[in-house]
Amino acid sequence: MNIIRIAKQLEYFQQYQQRLGRLVGDAEAQQLVSQGLTLITLGGNDFVNNYFLIPYSVRSREFSLPDYIKYIISEYKKVLARLHELGARRVLVTGTGPLGCVPAELAQRSRNGNCDVELQRAAALFNPQLVEIINQLNQEIGSNVFVFANAFDMHMDYISNPTAYGFVTSKVACCGQGPYNGIGLCTLASNLCPNRNLYAFWDAYHPTEKASRIIVSRMLSGSGELMHPLNLSSILAMDAQN
Image (cartoon, rainbow, N blue to C red; front, side, top):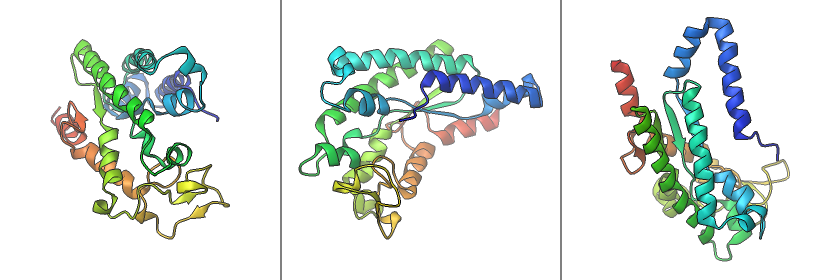
């Protein structure tokens, strides 16, 4: 997979600011970046594509799961601190969703359609520690720069009770092949559902547009259990007063 590593993404963020500065001036570029909303999602690929991808993966032989989480959390704290150094002042950090419930993992790991226990455990251990480093960084900075979005609970609402949100299923992807349409990519050779609005997942990993709208609405107006220390509507209201 052609994944852009996080260090390179930070480099691109810096390069973007330099190019922007050449167009509008450094002061204006700095203001635009500081007033913008930076979104970063952490954790999912480290578990799905590294730790649990194959039995006895390099990372799983190197670390126990709790120790691996401590390791990546320490690395993520450095990443978030670097974002702040580069001028980001409103950073929305989404943790891992219910990794064991996506169609890809159901297809590979589930015999009865239930979410995979180990991947769910990974998310349950990881997310609280991510909240801890966000609290630490905000305290060190003296401002609520970093906001945590509880993607796990946001997704689990409609995964656990899909009909309440107008979905016919939260297990089978709209586009894919194999069990739960969870094998491979969405291609011309894939099965395709007749109405994507009835499905919680578009492909093996990603939610449909309708499900994504549910997530965004929670980010905007969610309670303290879903958005910590405050939701995006509160942030926008505060910024409008400044």
